[in-house]
Length: 460
Image (cartoon, rainbow, N blue to C red; front, side):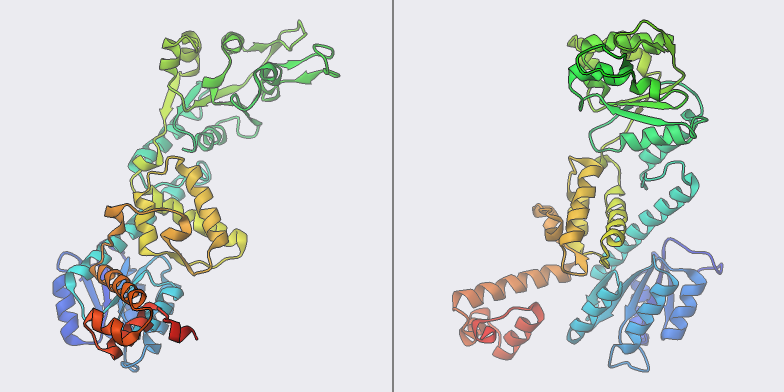
């Protein structure tokens, strides 16, 4: 038991169980964790207030309703009201499946059917501890960074180090080059560099060098005088001049046309611009941040990017890793986007099913954070359940990921598949299906109800 009150331990487990024999068995099974035991609702809530446990296992059959679930469900609601981030794993008998599902709808992390197999329950608890720790680390990071890196969600040590680098670099006017795949959040880091700088009260001006046709890009960057070309009806400032005293963000700078690179280099060296069709040299005081997903050194070797420009824009280079290399960030981001789109679309989705968690962690996310954001937005809009599944997310599980960590789930999936096949093979004949499966008809009826499988007779 923990020695200090009011101090949360990341390896603490609260067992809410009134059976003395099970209390001893479970405490012995989790000898590698700090274990606190409560036998009823009052003791459980007192322990939550005192220890703030990251994970709780909760028996639904608590006194005075040991044969029902009302006391257990009430305890669940109060635990989550006191500690919303706590992962509660409800434990119930097979006959209580409906109540277990109801508990998950109320916000329980998972449920487990008795009889208890310690090895399986330990896997579920360890997974819950891991997720709780990731979420806690992300909350601490957000508190530490405040609004400076707003929108950057991470528990990854690699990305946290990059955040610290941004904080150090932001106050100086050195030109920064952000390297990373599409969708990794390069513009978020560029905005953080601006927001943390002395220029934060001035404009942040962004231009995507790959999104503007080559014949228009020069005028967009440098501006033009009236009559400089057909359609130039008035004098117009370019993006560089418009960003004066602020920050200019050149996204996808690797796609900058080669002839225009010389003009950009001159601006970076002399900090003056000349509008198209003009002769006046206009001084501009601007902080420049560039970004690209391309390998600029390879482009230099191919003669497509100026080496002198490369050295001018890369006074400080920051490499932003893809999402697949940010350990633990996929689930953190998924929960953050779920919360955002729940609020935006008036939904009340409680979280993710175990197969969805496995799919999120196993998916390579080639489109990085942008792909995940779109994935979660679509899933929240379309989902009709209270938890998102891998199917809702449109993520396929490979053979290894499709195997649940929890052996109870493996058995249930195998049984459900076998029942479905048997029912289909005998065209819905219950007696013949039971014979094929080697079970009694009452047992098969029970399985049909448990798995939500309807036969043709039931549909009629």
